[in-house]
Image (cartoon, rainbow, N blue to C red; front, side):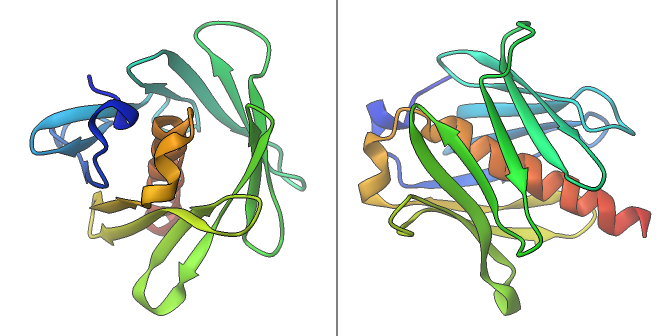
Amino acid sequence: MKSLQETQVKKLEMDKPDFSKKLYNIINQNEIYGSLLEIDERGSLAEITTQKTTYSVKRLGFFNPYITIRKGKFETNEAIAYLNLRGETAITLDNETFYFKIQNFWKNQWCWTNEKHQVIITFKPIISGTVKGDIEISKEALHYSQLELLALLGVYFMVKYQSEIENN
């Protein structure tokens, strides 16, 4: 597995290598930069793996939904991402706040922005029975230490969004 900071790659793809498994990778020319594995098919537990570490991600709450991110198998939260009614998710990693939101409703594009609301990662999913599509990293984003985690959290949100569409 490679690091985005090391290779300076700015374009990735969301890929599901095996239709029978709930595994998603972010790749560039067959090189894997991270993976997302859904642990519980009906729930929201998932495992994110980057070059640096493994995280567990779980969606909780009904009236006030949020997502917990834990490093490895630890019981303490590394971060909590709160969902709000405006369709924007805020998360703080390494003392920096990022926002996940829809960028272009008509083209089905989502993005992560920094505190200055500059787009750092753009997701252009193709939702057609499975989640796949393009991920674009801005050149300004390559200095963020949690770049792979943010990209994989975006994939997690796309996968959960697809699940909600299928269940309605």
